Length: 97
Image (cartoon, rainbow, N blue to C red; front, side, top):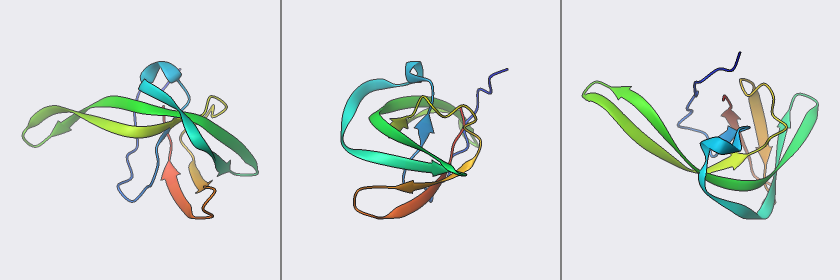
């Protein structure tokens, strides 16, 4: 059964989906992005935006995340990953459906 949830990490530099239908305004990435999870790696070649419905103290809202990376090989997106970019910087992000 698919999980219809996100874990948002405000300290993260990226967020990732494995379902391209969640994205809009999809564009190819000009430089590759390699995501390391456990002993495997995956490449992101596209990014887009996604609208998320959230509950806030003042009511329901929709927020838009831009630059969300599309990586179809991520089957279990609920893991903590390390992200490497061509600039050799590293960050972490939590990934979910």
